[in-house]
Length: 151
Image (cartoon, rainbow, N blue to C red; front, side, top):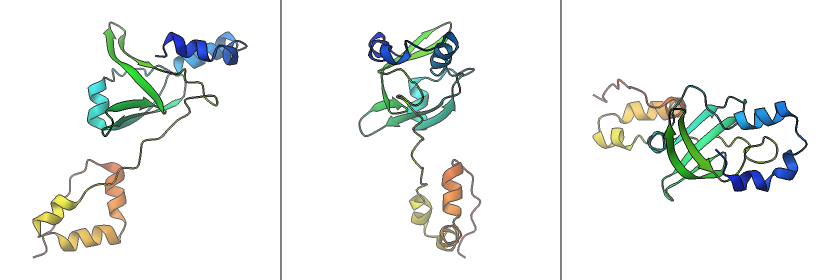
């Protein structure tokens, strides 16, 4: 959830909100029915999930910089666990249209080089790329492929 300093930074923008609007803003920080840990985000690379308030979240792990963001907002505290589940501290309040709008996960492109390195599936790989099925596989990875050999 947002740190105290994040609330202070947007106080003027939200002070005229109704109680229901404040409730919705707070629920934009809650994922119901999921206990998403830092290790889950690292393992997945990126997750797209809806919040209880209706805001979509793009939770992204940048392996190059070892950082995590939620809709582009830095996550600075991780895995504060309790009987409620888990909290991750972020540097901004997610207010749709103001800050923290949905940032989708980067498009994943499957790396077919391990298949190509086998040297037995060039026809298959050529057909997969020519038909655009490489994009379908990438969009649905992980998948299981039963690949006919060139022979």
